Image 1 (cartoon, rainbow, N blue to C red):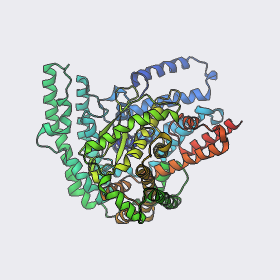
Image 2 (cartoon, rainbow, N blue to C red):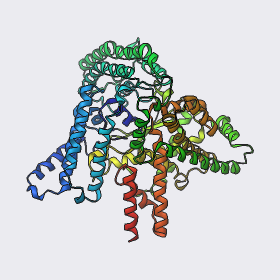
Image 3 (spheres, rainbow, N blue to C red):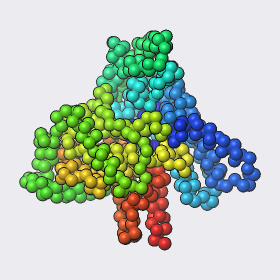
Image 4 (tube, one colour):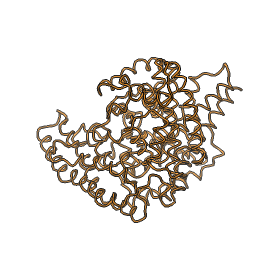
Length: 619
C-alpha cells in the first residue's frame, strides 16, 4: 500500500494492491480511542518546558497532527482502519478544490518537517523523518502530472470500489442503524461526485490525456452490472437482506424504503450516467496506443512513476535489461524441472503441456478454493521456523466477486482491521479455471497469505513503536517485493515438494521478470498491446485469458508491476550479503525480523538499515 492520497481512486488502489496497486487501524479497540490516548500524551508534552522537548518529540507531534488531518481528508481510509468518525463521508473525488487542498496540505507538512534538525535524530526517529519527508516531496512532485484526468480504468474503478463497500462484505460496517444511515450519506455524495469524475475525464480529452480504448471497453460491463431493473438484484441491496435481527420492525421498514429509493433514484442513475458517458463520449476519444510514451510528457511522467514505485534510481532502460536477464536465468532453472519430471521436448512444448494438460486444471471452483484452504495447516506449522513474530490477525479466502472477476488479476489481498473486527481477505480469481492451473496454488498462497501480504501487512499494523503513517503506509516495492520473496521460501517452509508446484513458483517468478520487460516496453519503448501479448506467450506458460488481463493491467497502472521483482531482488541481495558477512552467526529468523520490524520501508532506506544491522552483529 502506498502512502495516503487524496482521491478515492487512489484509496481504491491502496485498498486493492495490495496493493493494490493495486488499491487502508489501530491496535486498540478503535482508532478513535487511540487518538484520545495520543491527545492525552500531546497535552502532557505541552506542559514541558520548550527547551526540554527533543527534536524527536517535535517530529512525533507533527506526525500525529498530520495523521489526524489526513484521516479527515481521507474518510474511506479511516473506515478501513477501524476509525468510525467519518463513516458518513466519502472524501474528494479529484475536484479542483480538493486537489488544491491536497497540494497545500503536502506543502504545509513538508515545511513543518524541514524545521526538525535531522542531525539530532537516530534509529526509528531518523527512519520516520526520512520517510515522511520523502513522501511529502513525492506528493508535491507528483502534482505536476495529471493523474486526475484519468480517474477510471478497468483495474481501478472507483465505482467498483463503492459497490464493494455497499455490498456489506467489505470495510463499511452495517451493524447499527447509524451504520446504515452513514452509508446512505456516502451514496448521496457518490451520486454528486459523478460530475467531478466526468468533468475531469472531459478535461483529459481536451488535453489528450486519455486511457487506451482497449481498457475502457472493459469498464462498461463493470458499470452495467449495477444498472438493474429489479432493486433486489442490486449488490447495494445486500445490507437490507442481511439486516441485524436487533433492529425494530419500524427501523427495518424505514431503512428498506430508504435503500430501495436510493438504489432507484441514485445508484442506478449514477452507474447509468457513467456508463453512457464512457460509451458515447469517452471511448470515441480514447487512444489506440497502449503506453504512457504516447501521452504528453509521457516519458518523464513514467520515469517519475518508476522512481516512486521502486524507491530506487534505476532507469526504465536499466530495469528493462534486468528483466531480460532474469527471464533467461529462470528459463534455465525451468529446464532443471523438465529434466526432473522426465519431459522430453522444448521449453515451449513444456509451457503448452503445463498449460493445457487436464491434470493441471481444477474441475470446479470449489476444488480450487479448497486447495488454498488446505495449505493453511502446513504453513501455519512451519512459519515459526523462519519468523520470530507471528501476527495475530486472521484472514479469509474468498473468490473475486462476479462483477469484477473478468478484469481482476489472479489473486489479491485486503488488509484486516487491526482491532480484530474484520479479518484480512485473500481474494482468489476463479474465473475461467483453465487459466488458473493447479501448479499456481502454493506460490500464490505464499505471496498473498503466509508469509506474504497478510503476514507482512498485519505484522506492520501490529507494531507499537512507529508513527501511524508508517503503520498504515509503506512502499510498493517493499510490499510486493516481500510478497515475491515469500514465494522463494517455499522449500524452507515445507512446500514445493511436488516438482510441478516448484515449477509454479518459477513460473510466477518468471511472470514478474516478464513484467519488468513488458511494463518498460509499453511505457518507455512504445510497445503495442499485441507486442506485449506476443512476448508473454513466447516466454511463459500463461493462458490467453490471463495474458490479456495482465497486459491490460500493465497498461492501466504503469510501473506498479515493477515493484515485485525489484523489491524481491533487493531483499534477496541483502539476505545473501548478511549470510556471507555473518557466516555461522547468520540467523534467518533474526534477518526476517530486521526486515519486517520497521514496516514497509523504501528500498534505499531498507538497504542502509540492514547494512547497519550487519555491522552491529559483526562487532
